[in-house]
Each structure stands twice: as structure tokens, then as C-alpha cells.
Image (cartoon, one colour):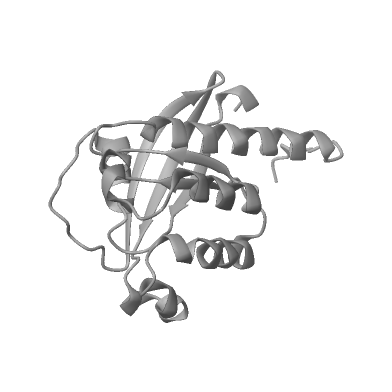
Length: 179
């Protein structure tokens, strides 16, 4: 199989507090649907989507994690203050588990910005502090949802190409002897 024929599979894990729109975002991105009825995720859900990024076939495997405190005792204290206060906790957990990977900060439900207690500038400050790309999305209005996942796929591919370029070339040999 030629290298050009290989499909890149990328695991994307969506984390955050309960009821922030993780499942809705994944449903919108993978199935093109929006459901306003809230149904909490129990454990982990999984969906896939194929896309073309810079002429490369990519398969995103999207993991939707439960955000409710009964599934995550570590961040219980943060739930009382809301999802904004939990940002650094979620980010630290990702860093501890998987290291430095392509990551974004998403402020969802911007169609409800009139109801928010967090100013736009505050969210931007957090993104800069954590050195994360920041997106404002509305899953309901389908605003910037595709851009989030396309950016992550592109960043992952760039990283993969850098790693491949830095690795010494390995020569593989095979033997076709009949015994």
C-alpha cells in the first residue's frame, strides 16, 4: 500500500462540564442534526466522520465524554462555579493524561450570549493564558462547529508530518523464501 493511499485516523476527545453541549456538538458535526432535548451522556459515546484536510483523507473518531460530577469526582468543586471555572482543571487533566496535543477551547451556545455571566474578553484571556486556539460556537445555529474539528485535524496532520520528517528513514526488507 502506498503512503498516499493510507487514511489518517485521529481520535478526538471532547471534554467539559455537563450540559455545555459536547454531545450536541458531536451530533451536529457528524450527523448534521441539532436536538434541543438534553440527555446526559453515561460514560462515553463515539461517532466518526470522514473529511478531506489539505488533500488528505482523515477519519475523525469523536469521543463524547460524560461531564457530570458523578463521573468525575476530581472536579466536583468546579461544578458549583460553572463550566468557566473548570477550564484549567479540564486542561490540566488532558495534559496529564496525553501530554501536549492539539487542543482548542470552545465557548459554545453563543446564541445565548445575552444570558451569559462570562464576558467575551474573559474567555479570550483564558485561551491566551493556556495558549489554546479559541472558538465561539453555536451548535444550534451550526456556527463554527466544522471549523473546530477541521482546525484540530489540520494541527494533528502538521504535527504528524513534523514527526515523520524528524524520524530517521527506516529501511524495511522482506524475504519471500519458500521452505
